[in-house]
Amino acid sequence: MNVIFDMDGLMFDTERVFIEAWDYAGEMMGVGKAGYMVYKTLGMNSVASYEIWKEEFGNKYNQKDLSKYTKEFIEKYYRENKVPIKTGLYTLLEYLKKEKAKLAVASSSSRVVVEKNLDDAGVKDYFSVIICGDMIKKSKPEPDIYLKACEMLNENPKDCIALEDSKNGLLSAYRAGCKPIMVPDLWQPDEEILQIIKGKYSDLIEVKNAFENGKIE
Image (cartoon, rainbow, N blue to C red; front, top):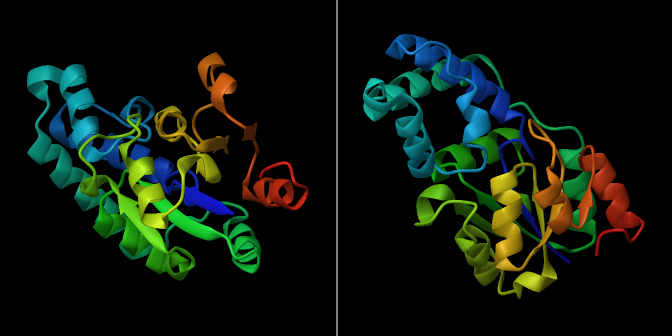
């Protein structure tokens, strides 16, 4: 069994933290609360996200300021709070460990952020492969990050299950040839996604039960 995990919105409830961060950054930049941009960039790495910001705000957008204010908010938040863990993460990881599954992370976030969150949650050692957004040229929804994860696992994509919450992530996994499983967070699947996913579960406890019952294989 080979399982590839997204991170933001799947393992950790970090998308909501980013909404607050971008509300703050937008106000500091003078464009107003911009947390809604999280919905427009779900699953994308920072380079791809910045392109969407540029389209939205034009000359009012300044990448350096966005990075500065986002970092300012995020660093303060995590000085005062632990990374918010999604329901069932530990239960699912323990189950997969007992089943001797090979596990990978395929996250659009930077390696620094991914490793910090995995370390803070105490789950880094479950994963033999960690692929991050700054290690890949083309962001989700392109298949590159999943192809790289499968390559590093030394497994054929058709033999890998991808756990994702966003449209871009699910499309990326599907285009790589993996089996996409959706655990919705901020976004519910549209018709296009319902056609490509192999299952949809409300949380990671349900995912674990589905593995146990042979619904995911």
